[in-house]
Amino acid sequence: MGNKKNVLKLIPSLGIVFILIGFIYILYSMKMLNDTLGEKQQDLTSLKIKIDRNKEELSFVDEELKLKQILLDSILKEINESDNMTLRNKVKGDLQANQTLQNSLKTKRHRRGFEQIVYIQVNDIKTLKYVKNIKLLELLRRKNYKAYGYDMQKGLADNTIRYFHKGDSARAALLKENVQKITKTKFKTRYIKYFEKKVPDKQLEIWFKKNL
Image 1 (cartoon, rainbow, N blue to C red):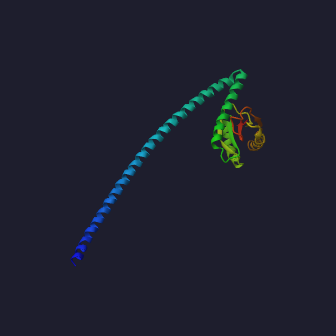
Image 2 (cartoon, rainbow, N blue to C red):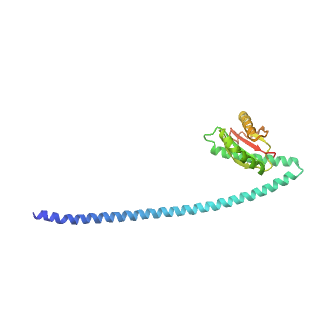
């Protein structure tokens, strides 16, 4: 009988002990959670600092590219106004080749899942406004071309569809027909030699100058 009374007296004490243990566990868990949240907050702060730095660097690069483009446009203008036709043609060809190589880098990164990639180079602001107005980019995409945005190539476009592998001649001819219907402008296909190893196959280029 005495043992039962002792047991009954212990029950409330044990209950209090369990409650205290549970409370301590909750406090410990909350501390751990706060520590974890603190670490995450520090990580987010560090990440934000890195993002801000990258934004500043990208902004600097963008401004630097703009300045280089202004200088390039100025040099190109002087060359186009010169009487040295050989020099003019050489510089024009070099600039066109450079744009093609830039396009090829995009192709190698993004061509997965697409049979054919098309780049559109426009000659001037008037041509750019025209292609945007007729929605050339969107119409080509509807015909299952992976068409990228418009690249301004001042004074370099000559209404050609360019291809770089002889096996792409039929594709270039079909693209020419499609572009002529959309733009109401006559184009020629042009095979550009010596680029087979530098440019992926099925890469085509539109060099468009609208005679308004």
